[in-house]
Length: 522
Ligand SMILES: Cc1cc2nc3c(=O)[nH]c(=O)nc-3n(C[C@H](O)[C@H](O)[C@H](O)COP(=O)(O)OP(=O)(O)OC[C@H]3O[C@@H](n4cnc5c(N)ncnc54)[C@H](O)[C@@H]3O)c2cc1C
Image (cartoon, rainbow, N blue to C red; front, side, top):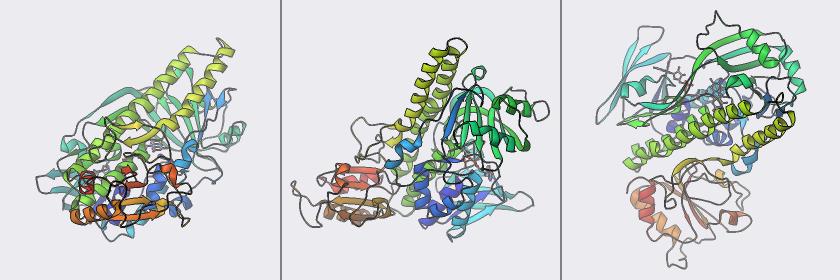
């Protein structure tokens, strides 16, 4: 997460330092499933090609998964379409690769930015702030070096056990499931062979009636023999006292060779920080929201945090982003994650639990078959209602009564508070390829100097307002036809993270007021 934020800030010309205690990314293949939105971030971080080139799995292996009942030998399995259903609403396609590969790509990108100074192999030990600045005491991990770094702001991207969060006094709330989980990384040609009875996919999620809705989860790391697996285990389990091989064989429903590479544990918890910032200190990623890796929300949301916060910090440091813009980071991102934890992660566990308690092929085969189909259709439908949006943000001209939410709909209509859907311009280029690094006014069918029916000239008034507020603004003009009418707005104001902040067919009565509000100056 920290590397994503450093790239976002560094590209914007903000001088920053990244402190990371590990010299190299840890080779644990978590955080693999990257959404279309995450790939858009990599596009804007100028390393999307490098990211795709770092893919380990062949490009023709779908990133999605198979749901299986009881074990991998079951007759009941389903490979529902999920993220592919919303592909057309994003500029980039999703991808799948281990988090350490994505981090290596970001580290390389960061190394090319003279604005970013890195402290790899150093630990942050103490975090302090006053009204005017912040300080971090850093210590060399394998040495005796110590240093004091001073900055305008600190962002803690230091994971679930964040010292930045704890030392700043930011509290967390949420559900502790009191359930220990194991993560194993191993090699096996036998499992590779055994999986051939199921469709070729990246992950295999087993819903077992004994597991109260928790998953037994196999994921491919490559197409040769490398896998990861996570599952609930008894809370007293340790490296020494638990039969990990037996667990793998029971989950698969057949025996296969296993060469373990890593075994680790974590506690199942959904916890969201009560605030994402205190004074000059912010938190992002797992430091702000911890949760089980169900549904691929962790890394993707952390990178969205980085994209959301990065341009706001840069705007503030460049002198045009107001304090309300900084506050909006919590106001936009926190409610989204509260709903993800509750409605997409915890609810999925509870619904699976209810389903498994209620139906069983042994009790009534036909009824189970019908209920399984229904359940899988519901799982598939989730991808379509997951549409994080900031309709209620104080820095968006959203609808009356709008709220910030993880729930929404996908459409090509431009809506204030929502992700801008892609579209093709007359030049043949995508509108995403023309967006500026500040705000962009998309003006379809409008002339520079011409007044509209309300007697205003949108382009001229936005340009004048941007000039007086020193807000960076790019204008992209095109005709209002050839498919661009699906936006259902001739004028669309887009902010630096590709969210629409205002849209209309006519110039606003007061462009200065609109820009002041969306830049957090009002
Ligand atoms: C098995 C598994 C599968 C997953 N699959 C997915 C998936 O498919 N999609 C998805 O989106 N998410 C997934 N996740 C979740 C995802 O991995 C996490 O959400 C993500 O790693 C969070 O990134 P982060 O940078 O916030 O925290 P971390 O990855 O925990 O990184 C924090 C970093 O801070 C460093 N650090 C901590 N304290 C200090 C300190 N005091 N000083 C210096 N450095 C420090 C650490 O060394 C570490 O590098 C999965 C997780 C697991 C366990």
